[in-house]
Length: 489
Image 1: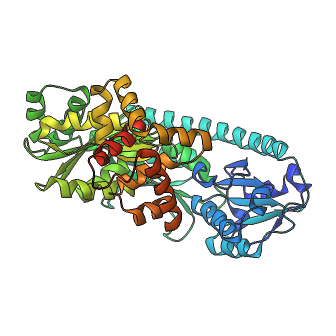
Image 2 (image 1 turned 180 degrees about the horizontal axis):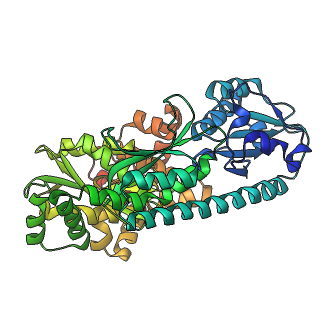
């Protein structure tokens, strides 16, 4: 059975802290705790997956203002954690009222720990229970999957497979097409507003073919339902393939992406492109996503691309997902719209994405893909989202400019600035880079660097002194800008 928040707070390891729920959040004590975690880091939210009981001693919170405290609870609530447990004492005598008000509004349970308890011991004891429960769920999920495989081998259809799943996981099960059509069902199904429903995507050859709804009755185990559902995805996918085999266009799209990924010759791409829906001379752009959840991201990426471009294809390989988007004839504008849409894609922590340059024709798809990959490999591309066209200088200099020549050029142009940063731990090089990248727009650069305009002017004046004067209106401007870009390599 799942571990509820009330069970975790009643556990002997936490009882000594005399936990007290401070926020008025409906059914707070009935929330499922997936894991117990301890951290004093205020920027911990992006590293959480949801369902955690987060323990904190409050030292970091006590040292920041009310605005940051409120942002902290809002960020945790947005991640869907089970609850925040704060230890009150000398560092944090009480939980600030502004935090409690924001937490209640955001639906985040906040628990006060009124006495000191060893967080390490709490985590060891409660998490060991959760691990044991997870192992039991995996075993029961595997049993359901094996029983479904046997049913499929004996000719069972979707209804029979779902009946096995419903029985083993003690849930109601329904398989629904992307358009909302019920493909099969078994067991008791809850009303739309009654009970908990776990939803699992069922892809066929990487394309979303159906969604599995698992209706958990009162007192049921949502964790077991999800595990059993995830274990049954491959079996249901095989059953769907028997019922509706993939079409020629879909198969051609898969083969096209494999050909692009392997760098096949032009004639192969020109044959596969039209069969997959891509015009031979049409504009294209490649997308590369590196993530531990690349396979799970594929359905979301396909759905996003289907709403933004005329046609697309994707292919997942280990921890990398690649996609190709067909763009309208005005390729630059289409690519800009694609960039904006992809920026909104939610990805797991630690994931990174790059969009390749515009390719004119299916022949240039492998090049766009290669440039996107090279962008992700750049030390200056950072994590998250990268536009390869914003790194054109670095991509050009990498393979074609000797590292010794590159370093010598940077030293001649920016040596005094780099030395100043080294000796005084200043950030003049970063300031100069942002200023030049903004087109020498001082006001915009100040906003990006979160500086007052007067401070920005003082920094620029010092940079100009080190670089031999204001470069604007001179031939030195291009050289300085190039040097700042090369310095990032």
